[in-house]
Length: 166
Image 1 (cartoon, rainbow, N blue to C red):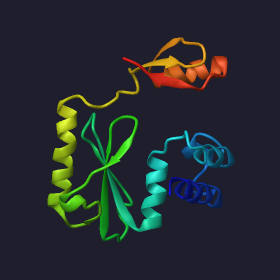
Image 2: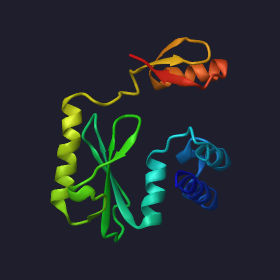
Image 3: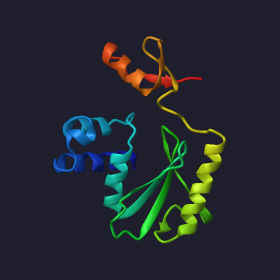
């Protein structure tokens, strides 16, 4: 399933140069499409936006660090919602009663419960701050601070294999 979703996203990216340009993607459409097709690439807002439209479903992402809620697909006439918790690195689906993952758009109680669920992780500081987390280059062993440090190291050395360590 993941590969099919990656293919869908890549095809949308390359088919709409007006919406998905280098300014939005941070790289050319071809580079982005090639990147998202790799199994070691992690998506974010671009992918949530595309999948929201494709499935005609609002995707509400709740940031565990800030408790901000981002609604992808808002303003469209979508009747359904899914909720994701973003922990700074990964997105995890938020489930409701009977492991439901899709909710009616006007189900305010479900959204409130989703936010309360994420708040429990927030209160325990179970999230990753990508600006300050500690990384290790798995190629040369150098210790690196934050996402920007990893990007600078990658530019300087060509190394692109990093792992978080505490």
